[in-house]
Length: 484
Image (cartoon, rainbow, N blue to C red):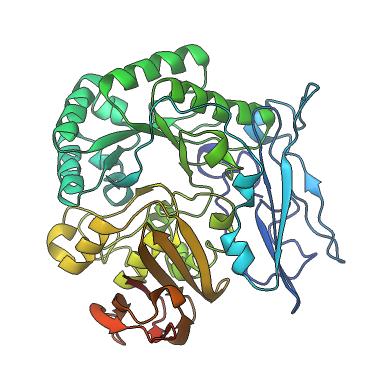
């Protein structure tokens, strides 16, 4: 757990602290504030245990794990009183008859039940029907590489055109659009996007008082009167969804705010993505217009931190086993720039390969994906990589664990309709040669996106043996995708 009211503009805890792999039980690595859900434990040679919770609504607070004792005892703890700027109770107020959240324990001799679990959704029910069917898909957003300066009318036109060129369904316009563009010109942008077949997501600050985050629009989501008026305008303007940021805390008062935003948005046909937020706890099913949360060290930290860039492959090999096993995860990645700046030169060098980046589009699951491609990629990225991004799904009908160990490497298979995508990443210092068993592709010739020894990403056709086996190498900080 992050220390409350610390970090950027006092927005912690935002579930954006990092993991330590194979940490011994009973030893605090983040002070004395405990650990966020989900927590993955390896029990010697016997197997694995994933601890989490689901079914948290406005009727309760979210919880977390305490620091462990020397003999491996962890308890469930309520939120820290300092969260939410000290406002709101640290416990839960529940009238009878009432419903408490589920605490879930997923066990397996291997990691297969951990990756493939559906328990977060199986024990909860929808709290209301959708007012308008969701439209899932891929999105461009200028902010991730071009940052605040890109929040102007001309740059947003360019990024709308990028979405159209990539056959993406959406564009996300991030913070400060209210002051830099304004509602009148935003309506013009929305109409232009519609003419190009692109829907619009808009960013909002969640708070008025809970922290000091200055980005606007502010004071639009935290009170009922302002929120309902804003969402009426959003619906009239043709906006498809919102990204709401900077929540910071697990108190029941904050859970009410999440729920109020979701319910009001549904009344106006709006989808919701949360950032700077807690772990989703069954919300994919409970709130049908909810389409994603961050709750992870996500793509923006690759821009801001050399240390996070160095850990990119390590983190990617954790998420399918931990964060993404418990809920959908809006990471905002797939960079094809060699340098994570607008000029694509000199600063913030990307340390992972293009094949690694393509693999994360499959390894990280969220029904609306804000991908980090930039307009220059239309000419400086290989055509086959762009074609992959034009086709990769964001929703999946089946997920299978193939191979891996948290923090070292991962291989996951996902099926969309009749098409399989198998993706992997390698966080170790040496190339890793794997023989994979893929019975669903037995005897097929597949498209393989992979790196050579010089870290060049190539596309080739390769056969899978009649018994379903295929052998391939994953380069350090590299990845692969094969699909049929």
